[in-house]
Image 1 (tube, rainbow, N blue to C red):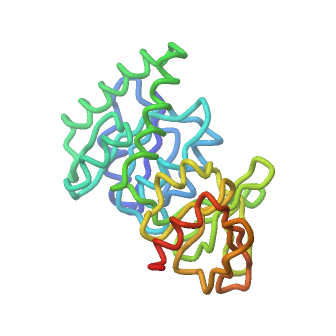
Image 2: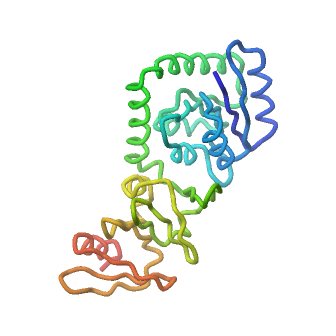
Image 3: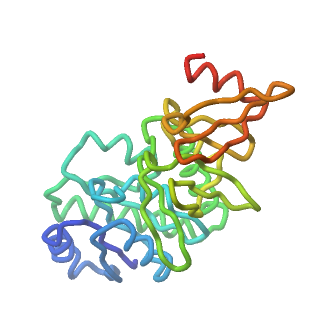
Amino acid sequence: MRLLLVDDERRARNRLRQLVAGLPGVEIMGEAGDGITALEIIARGKPDVVLLDVQMPGLNGIEMVGELRGPHVPLIIFVTAYDRYALQAFEVSAVDYLLKPVSTDRLQTALSKAGDHLQARALPAFALEQMTRLMTTLESSRRLSVERVVGRRGAKLQVIPVESVQAFVADNELVFALTENDRVPVNHTLRELEGRLDPGHFVRVHKQTIVNLLQIVEVEPMFKGGAVARLRSGRRIDISRRYAAGLREKLGG
């Protein structure tokens, strides 16, 4: 079992490393102090299991899990000092959940459960089921409203606070986050984002667009029931007839 340790506190990572040392069949393949570094290591090194802190600056553990894609998604064991995150942890299909300070017995139990899952995941159908359950939960749970997304610029990953995003736009099978001065591709579909963004701030206005209500300056009605929204940056966003009435209602009009 190849293990990745992710925690923004070096002390916490050192403790986990000490607890894991000597456990049969367990190898620590790396460690990370933030979510972006962890995503890069996961993509490159493909660990079997991630011991993941929930509370981290920049990109927290639950948001990090929401960025995982592909056939080699690792099993997640959340580690945190706050048990109020327990429900959220299992809602994103975590194998287990450990409270700090982590005890050796609890860690061994969690890793044993992970080992059982890894054996079962040898079957492709099981891996597909796990990924489907993870994404369905993230899309449907309003309690997991995302506060940050990860943009990709070449080989570099970039954390983007969603409050700075004016709109998410689909273009040629890619989805872009539009900020005041930039257009950054993100690894999400509009459907995923619509399920995870705060519905009080982000609204679907077109089959290719989700807009941030706080960024709208004015809405101009157009022929045949559609409209055009002007954003703070000066950008103009098309609003289809299908979504125009819902947008007016959200804006209080």
